[in-house]
Each structure stands twice: as structure tokens, then as C-alpha cells.
Length: 189
Image (cartoon, rainbow, N blue to C red):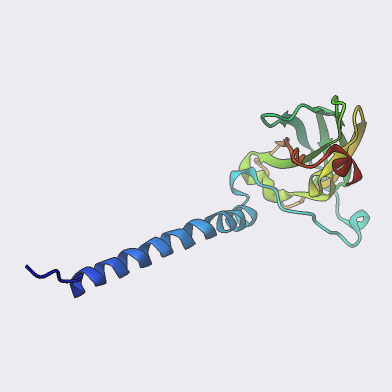
């Protein structure tokens, strides 16, 4: 009885299976950035775009129409900061630049780093909410017991559909503190 190696058909099958596995890994790896691009373009899932720049924000046309913008805040699991909007809602005319703020407090006896992730409901309205400045664009570091107001400067695009009269801007706050670092290194950031 001779011990023969794999046949050419078996080798072909193994190559095809390995190629399929590499393709699936590549697709899975590219899926998150692809999803982010689709959400940014379409406003899908209430995802807001990044920072919006306006050369002359004060010269934009302001509509007579009024839109109610509601504000919400929530902490992700494990985030213990006190976090809430200072105003529950404001009335905004499309094209009008508005400034509101959220309050955050670190109740711990050690420094923490947080990051807020925004979303807008209804999803369709996300593409019309333009943030000029937002605390969500950067990580926020709070010392033990520190309390701060964090601003958002935004406007509603005048092309927002007439059927949208109210939208909700919600922030989820996540703990980004690296607990493996010694406390003095976290404080030094």
C-alpha cells in the first residue's frame, strides 16, 4: 500500500478555500469603514458628520421656520460621570447659529478620559445638523471632582425637509481611560 500525497483536485480545493477565507477576512476588515462612509453620506443610523466649517457663519440666510432641537445624554456601561444637557430643548431657525452646552462631572478620586458619540433622530435629519464646534470632536479629560460645561455650536441647514419640525441630538459618553497606566500618567495627558 503506497502512501500518496494529496491529489491535484484536493490542492485546488484547499487553495480556493484559503482564498475564500482571506477574502472574507478582508471584507470583514473593510466593513466598518465602509459602513461609516455610507452613514456619513446618507445620514443613515442618525450618524452626524464631523466638524462643519463656514467661512462667514453670520452671513447665512436665516429662515422664518422654527425647528425644535431636543438634547439627550446617556452614559455607556461603566462610565460613571454625571452627564446631562444644560437645556433640554431649544427652538432654532434654519441657518441660525446656536450654542448650547452639556455638563459633565467626574465624581471619582482619579482622573478619567471620556469621549461623546453623537446621534440624531430622526435619521434623515442627521445630514442637516451642522456642528461648527463640539466637545464630541475630542476626548475630554476631567480631573478628580472636576465639573465642566462643554459647548456645541451648530446650525440647521436651510434645506431641511418641511416635514422635519423636531429633531433630537443625543450623546453617548464612553470611558476611554487606560486603567493599565499609572495614575500620574493619566493625569499628565
